[in-house]
Length: 406
Image 1: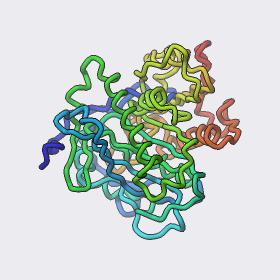
Image 2: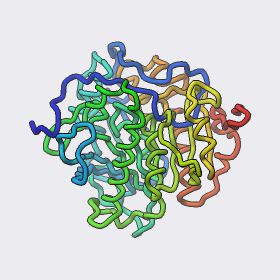
Image 3: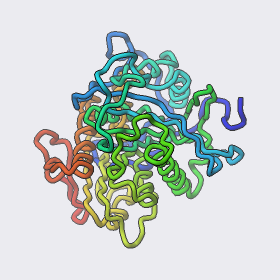
Image 4: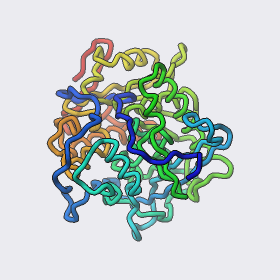
């Protein structure tokens, strides 16, 4: 195996609560998935016994392809002897009429390392690699040149980009190009095209002082490089010409949400961002950040709550901004993990799915993320973001100055 990538032992990392989206769910007392999970005992809800992603509602066919990108301008920040930063990126995008093979959810090795990292037993280690998606592998991109908005997705610490698939497929079905980024050595396992596997080197450092700030710098650099390779000269994707480079946003979960704010501070190409339930670390200039930003999170992110980072940063967001809380949500409610819980034997665990059903948490996350993007990248008015909704009564919009949500 190349010195550039470690072998794949059982990872020692843990899932932190950093970088959450500001949509708070009442009744949630545990902000993160525990390191140790009970043995799984039941198969998933699909007829084949494996998990399945819910169908997207946008109406368009979705394609998906995987890119390997190599940034030779910098050594890897986690493994300095590796003289280039290697990244794996999944693109979801509008496709011509669907057909062909469904895109894989993740590789078998990534499934194995994720389940071992979460200490899930009692199910085949390749189970998540067999999760049914709605995207067609390497389908031909569809759309008009220079007209498709681009959304970057960044996952939480230790979790792969695949765990944001339900959201990505929804956005792609509605005409967005979506780029999910694995930040190498920060999740339990990333596989490269030549079969090498990068494990969670960062898991050895996540209790160090300044860890969050360090991750922010790395993720911001990763995202800027991905934008360069998708929209600049020598773009690495056949559909890059379809992207509207003036309409780019970023959405992240947990520390990936914190990364969205950090990337916006570093890269002005990103017009708006969403932090889903993640503690923030980036230093916003004293002059403020005037581009649109939304927090959406669980109950721990109510104004004046356990995490003071949102209260601190709210004051420095000088443009359009919203703070939403989803009482009843868990830290993982904004990801695919609740959808996978039954297949892993975790369907009754509120610290995995919260008090909401998996279907409802996905529906709410999709609705509010899509509303933000439609407003700020497409200029379509979104009353959903201005007042409480009878359709989504679980969601509370917060006024941090008064510490009131409703």
